[in-house]
Image (cartoon, rainbow, N blue to C red; front, top):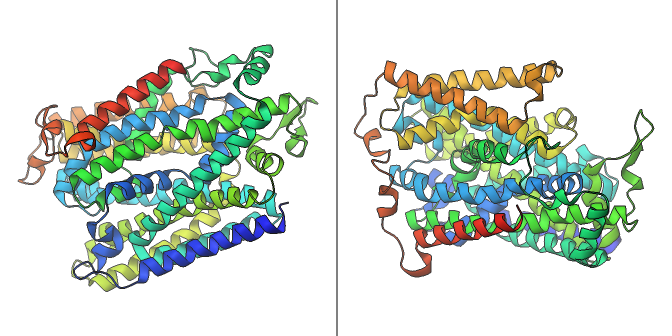
Length: 549
């Protein structure tokens, strides 16, 4: 339990964010930016700093704060690959995907698929995107936030997350993307400040890097400091699984998922969109040091007896003491951080939870309104379209809360999240990659690839969960994503020769004629040049992987 002062700080922050979101989202708009375009895409006025911060805030949630600390405690720096590999994917977004998204003037990514392929592709992606936003972006965030809040305040998990979800939904539903992006920018700063604080106190308690290395060496666990593991590593994530599997998950998540890319679609112009994505790539370097590493610090502190983990320790059937590492972040807050600053840490957790929910709700309302409802009522007014978006967001909150007991069955929140993504992402990644890089990718080939690939992913996922003893269930989710992607690639390539492409005047402009073409677009001069920034980011990531290989 935390002190009254910290509780007051946490509640005060929560109320302030809700008030800012409602005020900023409902205040009078500038002339010419009213209506659905303003509500769903902030009038396409977002600049690169806000885009970068909003991308990061929508990505980072309680799931990351809690589960990355958990993974750091369990396996060391390994899951930091999900953060650093994102930088490479954001470079792909900036260089290869953004130009088409901005040039085509789409409001949603399913809308882009219709322009590149056909209406059936748009419908399918819209349905899958709503489904994934509810489960991946909202329900998992609520689950991780509920676990922390229950431990800290002793409040029932379902009551606390329901209140937070409803109040976050209030300013999101009222204010649209503008309210979301403004609050996300504030929340990113608070979240980073909180993460840096807990890293500092854990580091201080540990006494530095050398004492940690000594403890790990004494237990033959220096591999916990390695990002790239050899074949046969017990984690199930050797280096080749990361380099083969992550791009499948990453391209879907960062380049083809509406919840994330909607911030880019609201950009003022192409350069702001590109630089905003790259700015987020630089910020993604930080989570390994301030989210994952604190979990590793906690593990070493527990080994030295400087962190009491008895509250989350139980005895298994074999009589062995087992630490339930889901609660490790909470223990770090309550045992390592002094009174007064704990409230800031809880505010950071709330920031991660609220930003993830608000971003997902806004994308859901956009998808349902533009891609599903407007199809059947093309002459619908802007006011009616916004109302539909608001009602769909409210319904999504209720469904997400209802899914919490089911998702809580996962032993590791982070692995559970990525396990689901690994079975959803392959067909979507496939049709987007072939769509922008291969002229011959046809509409019917993409349509059947989405249908067959999605159904195959669902069947494999269900079969492995219902029959965990079958050989396929032992395949790590990263490799499963790669295998499913290869199957989807074969399906679409073969079908593109069976159903030959027939480009429209629009689709003929939505693929790259050569790999040089993306680098020939107009760009800012100096350090703001997206090509220069891409090269710098690539170089930084290469050096980091050399250091932590």
